[in-house]
Image (tube, rainbow, N blue to C red; front, top):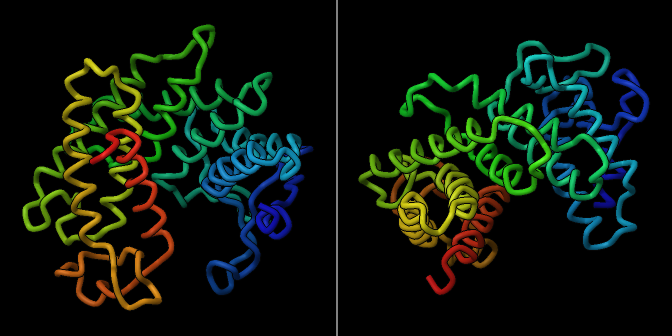
Length: 294
């Protein structure tokens, strides 16, 4: 948290007084690129820093968290959709669109509301979540994006929002179910890697989908038949994911490779990235919490 604050948390006065962003420094991500602030950085920055503040209140100030929330507010368009990226010296990027940043921002705003209940953060999160659900209302299930971040953020939003907050809860609940069913049906299509969610045996897409399904399952009543289907799919996916975990060489023992070591993407099976293991760990922890002992 200290590293994140000291290196990347910066004011963005172009968007208003008190607005803060998680700033990627010049050339840090792409050679020649200017400094840029992404909506996903603000959303996941809020998730990280809210967690740090819960553990140690002095780790980050409420004003800093509110500043990141203000960036998300500034990124929200009139129709409820988000700008994805702000380039310093240029303004909002009108071409770059991220599938995952809105869900990350919704989750971050929901976590911020727990730290700052007097703010309008839940209302902002609900507006954005319902806009996404409405935008996809007529999209066939097999064409829906596998938006696991909206599953995570939307499920938490529905749980945290008080009855006094007015928004289209039914619309959002229905869309989260459709997203979950779209992912379930994709798992059924994968034959070569039973339990996986990707035909080439890639671990990260399967782990992220499992994270989303866990969030959805946790949000459903125990009597809901979909919850039982989700638990079964999560168990199948979790067992497959565990089977890909590396035991050697010692330097990466316990990590997760890009793809199933028994096959998968040519040239990628030996690649190990921190996010492969992070998503797998999150998915497995979610499975354990949902079904202890499995």
